[in-house]
Length: 78
Image (spheres, rainbow, N blue to C red):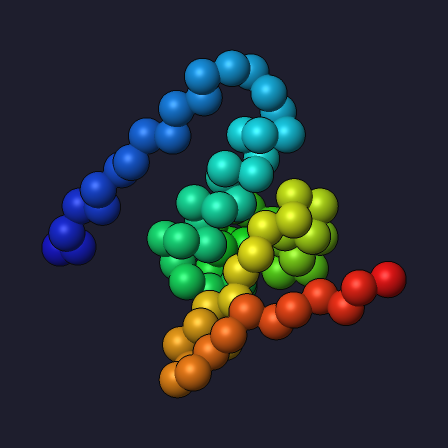
């Protein structure tokens, strides 16, 4: 018998669809730590999830952050 999963409620103080989408993507990435698993949790595929990450400007660098001496990349000035 599998242990019961703890369900965490995500509350939405307002009915902003864009903010809800962003929070769901962030929560799925945090819970799973994997792009593919987060996409499965959200009922989509990794390509659609990557588009949502870009759309909401979500910074998600799990592999880079695990490396010793990791620094956030600097953006080139235009």
